Amino acid sequence: MLRLFKQYYPIRNIFFVIGEGVIIFLSVITASLITNTSNPTTLDSAVIFKAILVTLVCQICLSYADLYEIHTVGGIRELFIRLLQALGIATILIAGIYLIFPQMIIGTSVYILSVCILLLFLGSWRLTYSLIINRGLFDIKIVLIGADSLAQNIVNEINFRNDCGYTISCIVTEKYHKGTITDARSPIIRKARYAGLAELAKKLKISKIVVGIKEKRGELPIEELLKCRVSGIEVLDGNSFYEILTGKLNVEQINPGWLIFSEGFETSRFKRLFKRLSDIFLSLILFTVFFPLMLFVALLIKIDSKGPVIFSQERVGQGRKLYYVHKFRSMVADAEENSGPVWAKDQDDRVTRVGNIIRKLRIDELPQLLNVLKGEMSFVGPRPEREFFVDMLEKQIPYYTERFSVKPGITGWAQVCYPYGSTVEDAIQKLNFDLFYIKNLSIFMDLMIVLKTIKIVVLGRGAR
Image: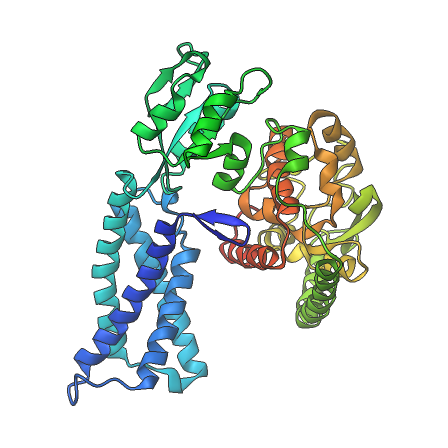
């Protein structure tokens, strides 16, 4: 596994993305050589640079079409439809670049031939990769021990993420009865006191053992796990493995001891200063760039419905301090006059016509740039919640208060990884992502979240 931006990726998946970039680059180069009838064996540096540009644009479009989220692509038909859509969008973007920078034009015949070669080789490349994934080739084989809810969560995630890079060779448990682990695609072995675990791992050529036992007191097979460890087999705590696998924590499974002794929660004066300076700089730039748009939106809101243009509402910030968050009003005035505090829902009839548009495009969030400038918010962080819901959720969700250890953000890890939610269960899932962000906070992770946010805004996902 390779760790990038505090997340783990299978080496196999990294190779796949790099390999696809090489295929796109070579397709353009090959098309250039074929169409260069005067001297088909010569390439100049300009052609190479243009091929790199085409490669970058194509891979960005493939990413935006979710073609690097392997588990989201249903079958061959969907794969080729998404490929055509991504390459179509790439063509439009490249045409736009050519209008601005004519010197970058690679030639119509070269591009058309490149696309034809690409469809052939990219389709073959992806079908081959899908075959590798479905057969579990190059997967890291693990033994999962335990049969309670933590083990079940790990089984569910591995089954869902067929490109995660792990295969469960077997599940070993001391206490097992039918139905304890559902949807287990691996044999379940019952061993009293986990006797012979080390020998079994060696026999199966296992390099990792994942301890999926939630309550370890009196149940953890210390001697057997020690034998595994000294023989070179890595032993991972189930919660740590779950974090690596999913990019989130599981507040319903972890205990305070795990949070205290686990890696992460690192901060420094430099990191805080850099984040604050970045917030100020970006806020000033974006406020300047979007000011004409903000004036136009304000005018539309005023024309569309009665009420103030800016909607200000009290939220809970860092250290549980209260502040007022500012947004463009997207609902009718006094939307909660009769209902009291409620979460927004799909097809919410309180949303105005203009509000429906600006919520989808996230334009309603732009006034929060003022909150960022004032230091009440950051660009990236947990979404700020209202005190009414905070008081309710703190009583029902463990570790909910920990999300107030950092500034709330306009966007965040939970927002880019989980759709909008309006239930306690949704709040739990969002907290799982928020705690992962707080635990692994870094400058590069903030950058990745911003890039993912741009993708979500462009594709119009997740708004209510």
